[in-house]
Length: 326
Image (cartoon, rainbow, N blue to C red; front, side, top):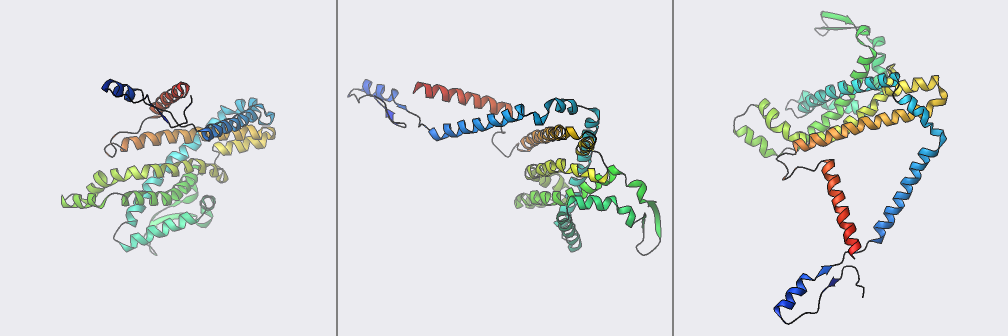
């Protein structure tokens, strides 16, 4: 006799104590069958298999040429430039974002106005426009000087000598990144409970110490996930530095594609895979940084990917055994 899913199977109730104990120990709840889940899983697996088959079997992708280009020295040189530009711009952009956020939260109306105007302008102007404008900046200002406004200059220097391709790329990306990082940092600071500020003020702690040791460490739990999203966007945004004559990863592939027009698709696949690798590394670092700053905020730290894999395999084995027992 078969029971419907979700039913409870019991023995006939016995009048004796021993019979009632046997009844309680013999109870077993049958798991609900979910045919929709299995159908959806099968459909997804079929689509994934078709996609993989198309990648492997389509000769248009030229996987032999992909293997040839993937570790070529010029491609690796472009990858190194991409990493350098990303690292410099991420650090400078975050520092600039912190300063802009503090200015935005300042009691000075001038600092608030300047910070708001900067964020508004840089978030409104496309990044490619900023880069091209900086690349042609020497046409507007031949020399730059530091001194009294409308008065004598203390010293001046030739702008064209400092505006190398790397400098233009880093400055342009940093200026753009600082505008977005400012809002991320400001949101993280505002997420800290007001009681933390009041308690620190009641203890007579200096403002700088309050920010460095109390407010900012707590704000990082909110800042890190949002800023890593910005960082991933920055990794991909470095592909625009090709337009200011800096041969990064994408620029090198574009240049090689002009020389070898038959290898355009393999070169694009090389660029795609390397960007996937870079963003994956950033995502892994994000997980461990978030896990570090979660200490004290949660009862237990989130499991690592390896721990999740072990737990998932254990749950899968338990589910299979349960389904087989039914």
